Image 1 (cartoon, helix red, strand yellow):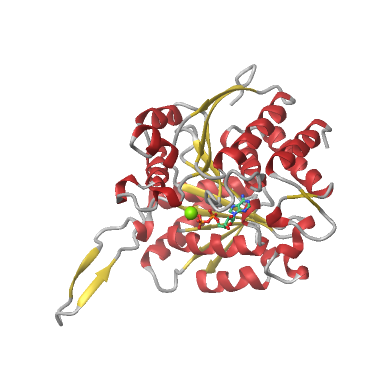
Image 2: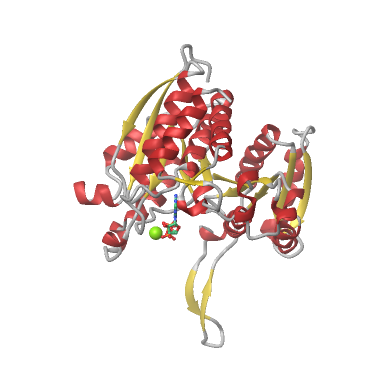
Length: 368
Ligand code: ATP
Ligand code: MG
């Protein structure tokens, strides 16, 4: 996007629990980092999840959905909480999230796992293995075994009860996620590892064939292929060997959770879900939930949402410089010792969500 002056409409979906607290910080940081880069925003705040259920009777009102679809990017806090846990299945706050992803047609889910130098000891891995890890899992989100047909329950020839699912990918589905992953790798360290089970599964054989074909268009990216069993081992044996990882829906589900534990702190992890280029807005959100146990107490760690805002700038709007301003501000705030409870360690300064926000603003301002 090179509109001049660059101006974007952002839909904010604070949601429930700590969602509003972390979104408020991310909004301020987006505004400031953007204004320093000549970016203008129009923010639209809409109801989603339990908050929407209480106010309108549904977790994803049409008005929220159409606002989201008509914007340049969507920034989401979190949805759900004890209060709505006994709701009917189709009225659960969490169903709003699945529906939103589906409606926005976001097929590429990006989950970075970076070990911040200031937080190495939060990792589940030994310091020498965790230090310097900076990888990105690109998970295919709308195909594969979670959606493939036939699926269901039945009976086999012996009259025994069975359950079955189908791992199914078309060549165009693989091609589009492969293109997305190669482009992401180009913005990173130009290394892409495609993870599959091509020694056993036909869907994986096609996956590998298509990824190898698409690779011809990205000669500047170094491609490797790895079986998923080996990849899950390599991720904790030597995670630094990875830059960008691309994989199918189910392997990505598992590997991205595994990768998040390398960093050890759920409050630091952002995500992005993207559709086809120029097809509509991407969806950006922290990977953590609404944390009802600490909601309303100014204890939430806002870094994951702030880093999601940086991804929004980089992958959603193509505003790399503003994205870097935010990421540098996060590093600076950590360097100056400010921590929420979830990442606190002796010798650092324990502060609340709001104060982290204020310190982040100072860091953005001082243009580090
Ligand atoms: P979901 O089911 O929505 O994915 P969950 O209920 O499994 O979420 P979270 O809501 O992410 O889990 O909370 C898990 C734990 O992590 C809770 O103890 C919560 O307080 C803590 N937590 C989550 N996010 C944050 C955050 N941003 N800052 C501090 N603590 C957090
Ligand atoms: Mg929850």
